[in-house]
Length: 494
Image (cartoon, rainbow, N blue to C red; front, side, top):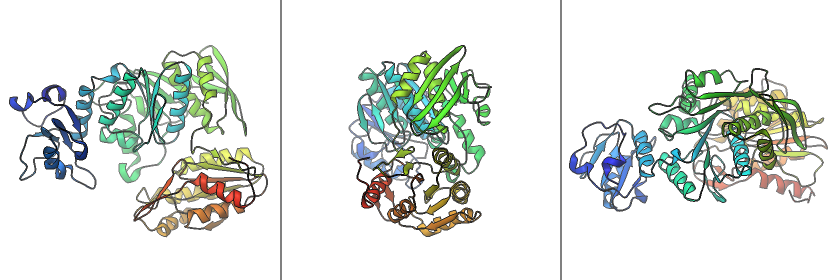
């Protein structure tokens, strides 16, 4: 492929010289360490490191030219191509290089503050049950057909996503389900991709350290439904019960499908029954009614199921097939995941790390017990500080006992983070303790439990690490809870 062909559709800041345009390019990279002979290297302006620092190293490794939205640095020797937007240029070039796999593999993008991961797992289960070979990219893991891979980002860089889609196509895959974060949308990681279906779950306070305001945060989400310089998704599956949904689609030509519990939803749930065994309800769409059973717990998962069902409908699946796929999704790691060692109370681990998510998951716990709800939570460092007191308020208002601890403090002092959350926690008279050591905090939460109680360990969910100022350590809430339970004499494998 020539450089001109690879950059077809990229907005250049100047003319591309003919001798440079005719260069044969063997690949492209944004990490200079992975550059090979005859590659094109993309240098970004990062939040911490200027990618131009690595441009000369990329040339030394065999790169033919460097693409950047930054001007050529002093002393650089080689071909420098300046573009209007670096990450959008990478997205367009990646799509060109991999022959536009999104025109053959059907992409589903899922965005929203909460519920993306569960909805993605549910939809992939529906599609797989329908006989399709699928891929998934998201917070917990990437799945390519039967293969599981680590997830460095919720949404991969555009190059990695196109490479993944091309590999999926090569294995006979037909559908790719992707969680699409607001960061990815704002940075242009999915720029130019033709989505068949876009799903919106909800919008609540999060990531304001990055987006600054709720308006900017919502505008980033909207880019999935009204993308710049590319076609809108064929289908938009929208939460009829969330007011922000109306702002997502605007005058988009996408075919809208509204889901929810209210009468204004087109695809909705009726006769909902929720308990320890999971969920049961009637899935209603147009003139059809289909009984649904799911092992997932809590009424909040009804909306996630409806969102996935709506996407299934967008692919022409009948409700019986959708229901069978829903039943096949047994669990989602770290999403109200039970730790069962035979104890007479429920221990659940959940990824809830916003005040809205924490409220939702505590309400799930409240609906499952006649005893007390004991909630352990912490707040992440180097993230939106304004949500910390709100999380403290949510935990205190809805729980019977709260254990405040550390999450991923990153570069911040854990005690400073906990003090921010304590401001909200102390607005209620709820009994509570503070313990910065998360392992000790989990022990203290569990030792409070009596038969019939629910112990909710919130914040880290599926994560198997804890990020400190100077190191990252192995830490898994589920493992720690299981060790504590066994130390108390409960031995059933969970």
